Image 1 (spheres, rainbow over the protein chains, first blue to last red):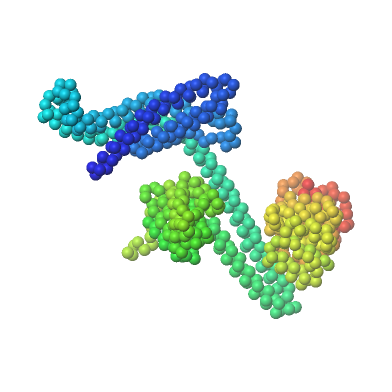
Image 2: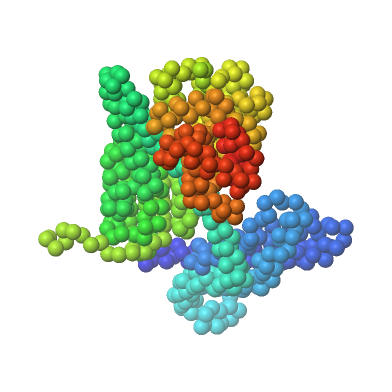
Length: 426
Length: 212
């Protein structure tokens, strides 16, 4: 680490220590407020109104500590349950009281204040003492012999003694600055003990999330099946009926009116090829054959060639992914690219697909005018839902004026190493 | 003969129109959605209507609903319902008023042009035409009473339910008409249905029985 980084980190930690002292002091009235509100709960229902307010303050305070912890490398995750959706005051009160995180927050307030004070004061006092050593000489002259000392020399009796405090001070200052980040981390660990989700709370959060994504997945699947049924009903199935009808009519006409019969047959042939085209489109929408044949990499490259704007594909995924993941990834990228060609006004787009470890990271970017809003269309929401079914995520960056970048991540494991047909002949 | 066609897909609507015209039926109106169908049926009072079950705007069964509603307003208004799939449930609803002039066919049947036009004419004439698929599904249900029928009688029953006359059944099964009417009398006796000479009444009786 560079010396400057080291100093900067240290100074930042000292500053955070001062803030921690101030915040530790704030903890005390918060705790008192909490206790008073609890006691007042049976009185005229005041608590029903006050407790949510006080809890909101405490949570904001705890969130601040979580953020400070994270900035010194001790991440503390928020453990709170999500609020009830039709939120009447009583429902909100119940939500707060039944959340163990509320009580853990309250239990943290006092120990947290003590830890904040102790570590904060330590991280401030050591560097201050070092500074005192550095500037001691004039101070000593002013205070006089025998009344003052520093470090190992006590009392200071001569100018030479006074000068010796300078290196001592510098050393102590350096130690104080070096130690400050560790003190911050120690403080954050104390906070984490109280403020991090318990494994119980973590499981609960996960279950809630799973229930949501499962419902979304089921919805999306039902809608997808309905779309396929509609496409078949109005498309290929109807064309086949029409085909039969036309051929039947031609059969009738073949003797009576051969010219008409010939025309009808030509028409029938056309309808049959249209039906095939429609079936092909439909199949591509269900599971693209090229995806089955070539995997994600090949399918995305094939897709890129079909788009009206140039799209570069940069991919290092050569093996086959598990089929559902492959399909989700393909349709997510396809949807993102469709959005590019439909809305962005871009002249160029790129896709990059990489697999650091067991994570599939896909990025779709363009040089369009930006301003994409996931809330506006169904496309981006659809991507989110598709990915969420596999614990994947989507992030969108689309400032007005562009560029738009969609970053998607999917946890995955390669199902089999790529077995290339040409590998033996290389 | 005046015909109204209700079909949302232009391809099939035009095909049906052309087909019926080729057989000298007069297509007086075509409709491509559900809400317009009932007023059109009541206004045009066609000799027969050919109606797709699934129509816009909801793409569910508004064709069927409009057909049933029209027949409550104009009892016995002949309607031939077409669909990509057949459900005995829908057949039961169509036959619910126990009047003739009802047809329910898979769209596939239009490829046999003459038979299809024949079905349209029979429905227009007050006859009942059920798709063999519907009849087959009804017969396939395990029902105690049908067990008393012989295999031959079941065949005759299926043909009869599809709307064939005695002569038609006889031709299809390569037997004499006399044999057919003997089978039919046996069937009616075994199933406890009132005897009847009228083809259509017999078909209805059988279908209602099967659908019950």
